[in-house]
Amino acid sequence: MLYEPNYADSHALVIGINKYRHVSPLEYARNDAEAISALLVDKFDFPKGNITLLVDKDASGAAIRSAFLNYSRLDGDDRVLFFFAGHGHTVTARVRETGFLVPVDGKADDLSTLIRWDELTRNAELVPAKHVLFLMDACYGGLALMRKAPKPGSARFFKNMLQRYSRQVITAGKADEVVADAGGPRMGHSIFTGHLLDAMEGAAATTEGIVTANSVMAYVYEKVGNDPHSQQTPHFGFVDGDGDFIFNANGFDEVDENQIEGRDILVQVVAAGQDRAEGDKSIAETLKDFLPAPTQQIRLDDFVSAHVRAAMQNLNPEKFPIPGNFSKEEFEGQVQKYELAVGDLRTIAILLARWANTEQQNLLERIFLRLAEIEKSGSGLTVYLGLSWHPIQLLMYASGIAALSANKADLLRTVFLTRVREEHRTGVPDTPLIIPVTDGVIRTIDGFRLLPGHERHLVPRSEYLFKFLQPEIEDSLFLGRSYETYFDEFEVIWALVYGLHPVRLTPA
Image (cartoon, rainbow, N blue to C red; front, side, top):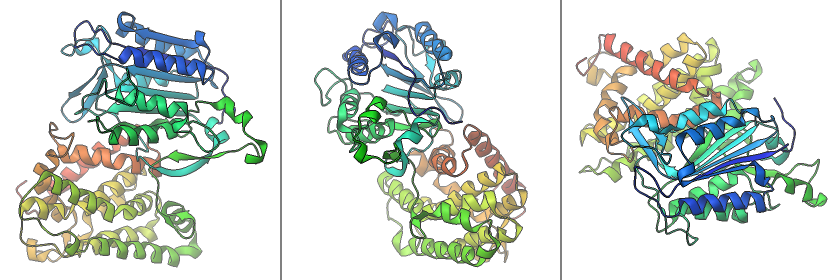
């Protein structure tokens, strides 16, 4: 559905809590909320009567829920901004984190008094407004966001973004971080809101003076992350949709006619982005051109082979020396290097698993075969030896989830059972891929448990993969909330295939 290229009306729910009843007070949360409220009225033409400002004693859980659900009456071409400055809280359940906002009457030891983050996002589905933006000056975990990469990755016309649905969010920090209530670029404001106000007032504007949610996200991410007084890393992205909240949409009509053509302005969108190939086409675009065209099969074969060769060069063991001693920093650096080495191949593997026909299935198999041929070091710390299988593990997860989403059992079989030569380890000439990969990555669990934000997880490697792969798979397949279901199903199938197969190196 396309909406009108403008906003019919603008609404905001702005919350700031200094004086909590049951948890420690904050100093500048109310200032932050009042400054945001005033800026929306003075600079972005939000009608004063459309702004609900809840501060201190008025910001109860019931009042916040009631005010937000009241937006269910809005028009489809409206926009809604939700700002919260206060405490966040994170609870680690059996597998994943759950994030909460703490209202003025909230108790950290009584979850019924808190507001679950995903309660807000679920309720956002009941709000007809095309754009909803959450600005959260609080730290908590449990966010499942799409297109999270903090860099401009694609461009879209301003008018087009106004016509597309979106639910966007930026939070001040993650679960293992404490929000800084002072020390920012503006006296009397937190670090996050200080940089947020700068961004909204023009520091994040395009050359035409347009301020978008995406440009604000990118600016605040960089500034807060690099602020010398900050111990926070903002978390941001899309909950749903691919439009963009525009702060000064009325400014579109004031842009010099000589600057625009067809009433469009091209602006940058913060997205996961993809590397370019075949001239100006991305890898995904090129692959989508080749896959359905019978006359392009040779070029498709060459295209995939070229990227496999590049990945094999990137994964040359000489580039990944085994350290003599373990360190959390070294392990994290190795993980990131491995991920970068097969970044292009993940996009290719996802799309092959989703769209390849029977004749093209061998291309996915070739990726696994060739990467498995790369020599692995035979000595060194076990955790680093196991980590050498991490790139193939990523490709298996990415393509396996894509195959599940397309209900392609044959491609899923390729992911698990491609036969690789591991006779020096298994004694069997042709071993299913799942065996050496599983036996390798099992050794890395203690390393993943030490990565930031994963210290408390029962299954740190799984949680890490879930968060890492989500934006890439989402950009390619647009699975939305079904991503978690497919991810869990894939892991169950992995465990069953590995556990039931007669060739295993580690005990079942």
